[in-house]
Image (cartoon, rainbow, N blue to C red; front, side, top):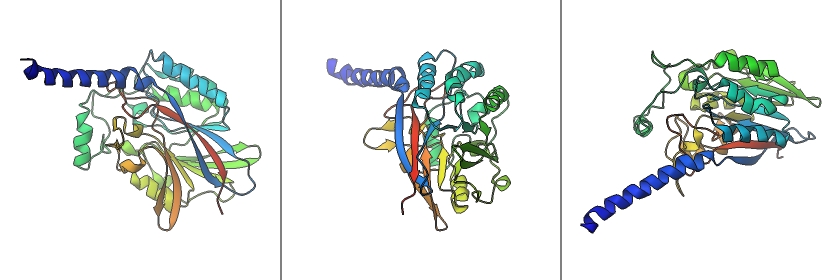
Length: 309
C-alpha cells in the first residue's frame, strides 16, 4: 500500500514545493543584471543606461514597487522602458509610484500589448503548443471582444509630463552633457502595431549614437533595424522564458526569436550589418501566471563604452 501511493504522493509534494518556490520566492527575487556594450564613438565617456521592462504591475505588489524605486540610487544617465508596465487596469497609480524616482532622469519608452489590454486567463501549456505550431502568443492578432482595455493614456500622459520620450512608431532625442542621442522606436509587434515604414531610413547622421527600441523582439523588427545600421537594439517581452529548465534554459520566447537569445546581450546580423541586441527578462509576470523558475525578475544596467577597433 505504501509503495502504491508513495510515488504519486512524492511527485505531488515535489510539484507543490516547486510551485511554492516559483510563486512565493523566485517571482519576488529581484535582480540587477549588469552588461557592457561597446557602441560609443571614440573619445566619448561611458553612459549608464537603466532598462526596465515587463513590470506587469498588479495592485498590492509592494515589494516590486519598493525595488523599482530603489533603482534610482544607481543614478543612470537615462532610462529605457520597453513596455508591458501593466497587468491590472487599476495598476496605473502604483506603476507611477514605483517609477516616480526614475522619472526624475531622462528617459524613453515604448508600450507593449499589456499596456493596452488586460491579460486573460489562459492555460500556460498553450504557449508550448503554439510554439510547436509556429504561433506565438497573440500571434499578431488584436485581442478579442471582452478583453479589458487598460488606461494606457494615463500612463502615457504621466511619462510625457515627466519628460520621457514616446517612441511609438517614431523617433526622438535626448541630449546629455553635449552628446546627441537619437532613438527610433516601434509600437508592439506582438499585436501588429509596429509601422517600420514610418521610421525607416537608419540612424541619424548628426547623432553621437542611435538606439533602436521595441517591446517584442520579433525577427522582422530585428532584421529591419539591423539592415538599416542601428548598432544597438533594446527589447523586452520574453520574460526570459519565465519557466526555464536549470542547465538547459528557456523553452519558449513568446515570439519568433530563438531561445538562445531569450534574455541578455547577444547580436543580430543581416545584410552584412551586425547589431547588439539586449533583451530584458523583465521584472514581472502576467497576473494569472505569477510564477518564475530558473529565471529571476530583473532590470538591467547597461554601460555603453567606446566601440572596439
